[in-house]
Length: 212
Picture 1 (cartoon, rainbow, N blue to C red):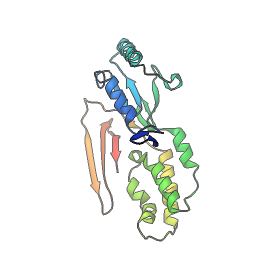
Picture 2 (picture 1 turned 135 degrees about the vertical axis):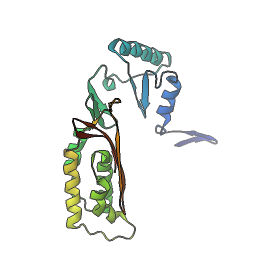
Picture 3 (picture 1 turned 60 degrees about the vertical axis):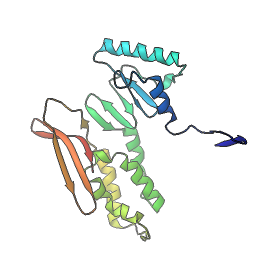
Picture 4 (picture 1 turned 90 degrees about the vertical axis):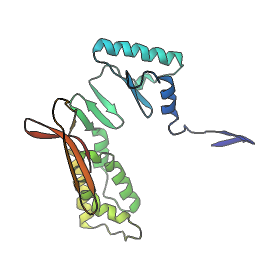
């Protein structure tokens, strides 16, 4: 924030949440009915192709009325899948963004508390795809505790490699089928709690969402 003169200030960077609030004002009567807003992204949808086209026309007309300029390179229309907030979404369900996983896989073993925090932050972004994430990461998270000596043990290296392996082989979170029953499984230990929501198809359990 820059100070212009007494009593006046000017933001030098975009305020957090400002864009989301702006979209909420511009599209207030369309959100949840024909479009959704996620942070600085917004998406429109419909029950059919023609319905999508109609909603697209309404959305573009509203942008024109509000003088909202769209970045053409970031606009995608009528796609079968795409990256949304770091996740790949398709008719099959929710997947990790493979380009981000490739970046994580290339990371060398952490050598400091800062690099451990960085790795766990990146891997933790996709923790819903990794069963027992908290348990697997425990040897590394222990090094982040107050006054803990930094000893990068064999257990830490094993946890580091195992988490990367789990990310490479991350499952697809399926789209719910509302006609099928849901299963919710919960578990807890001395240092972690978790739950898995899913459905069975052809006698096989498929996760919809995991929080461990």
